Image 1 (cartoon, rainbow, N blue to C red):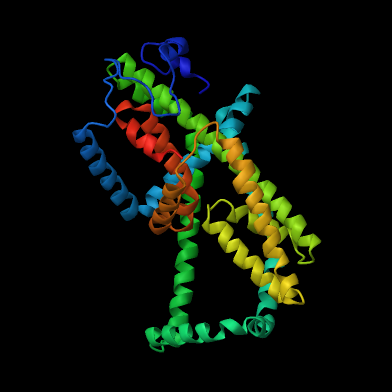
Image 2: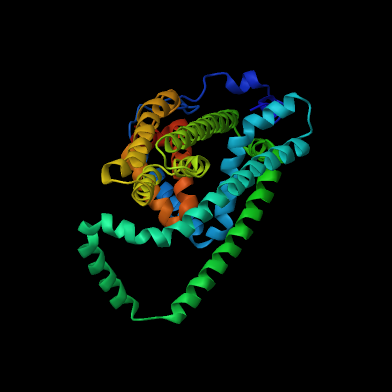
Length: 376
């Protein structure tokens, strides 16, 4: 944090805040001012109260998802853009102008990528109906299960007909309207979060009664910001590398449209496990639609799987292991849970939210056991 020297009430300097140790990314954490009690498990009353608080927060997050989701997304994007804000501040650019420049730059890239893939995506959408007979011929061994599933879905549907088409159109319109509203709210909150800087943390520290509490809150906030920011930047850079490698591989194997496949690989890699699995299926069907022979059609999916294994099992874990590791089973559970809560945005936010929870538990001694449980 750039101006941590002024975060404590009464103008305490940064050396005083850091005196006595920093937050460790392990079960040791920050010891209470009264001294370590040596207890391994947290107090039962604290556990019960923490569980009740967590249930209340999750209930509010589910009921008020239209309000809470943009807030959480803006907070995560703020952590992602924080290194850029610091760089622009060192160049003596005003915070408001720096925040505006970063937001415009990020979303200009998003709009540019969307425009670049719009044409190839439309071409593939037009090609799909003509390629369905070819796809069905190559997947004849799946025809019986597919027909059984179609009959089952038709019985459930009950022959809705034209009203179903109307319902689909209305659902798509509402979804687009909801996305536009959430997008604007996220941008607005993100701008003011970037401009405000450490204002909220400063006010919170000022009302804390004890110096040890002030030091602990500042240290925790610094660790959350540094670790999550490093995680998000690392993941974004690695996903971009996956996208570039995938685009080159698809061009080399003859699938074509490298920009489209590269952008899809980049976006899918933000969703752990489910994103790459969906990508493998997508590249498998794309190969079946365009390439002659069954085995050559497996090449796009095989190349994508190889790229993902190198990135996901070797490079990214090596880069992130120094900061924190997470229990893979809990990552899957978190992914499923947040996807159920908030859909695709929830799946993208699942790992950052789990990482924030682990850092906080590692930094508060009574919750160290929970942080140790979350560790990989």
